[in-house]
Length: 203
Image 1 (tube, helix red, strand yellow):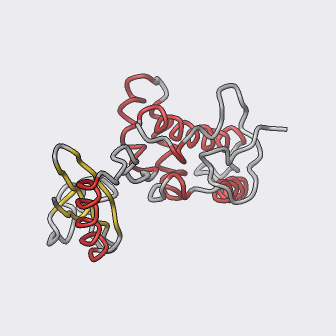
Image 2 (cartoon, rainbow, N blue to C red):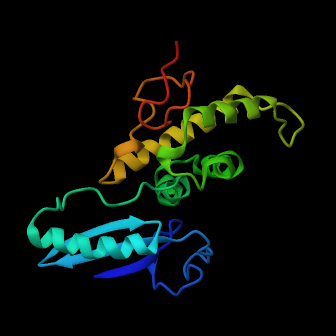
């Protein structure tokens, strides 16, 4: 059994006395704890925002496993942030897309500042609508308003990251594709999560 500090940015686990992530150097100001329990070949991993809860859960999980009350197949991986998905997507894009550098430019300029640190299930259609409105009112480095093609590129890229996560992760959950193949990028409604059907087809 073990409890470690979990880095949401690089997804690494470290000793409890570590002040910052040794890998990505992110300071652990708001800590998240990873509890890993292995009993008789069965392994369960859970995540908590509080060390006291993590310690209590460690004991409870072990007891549940021994009694056979715990469903080992239950999903335990936390939903990733957009930055975490992007980190895995970029190497794939470099290998399979001739225009990967366009994705890199657009992600760093428009998507990362707005959504990079947000979990996929925390990005709402309202957030995306706000981005669209900001871009429509914004001015590019050339001193011109952003084109509709540029705005659509952000929506397509964001949707592609959701799809990529759904295809490459065992746990899809809230990260299901925002658009089905063949659908156009349409109007977004309300404050629903962007990923699981939070984007409507064009009317």
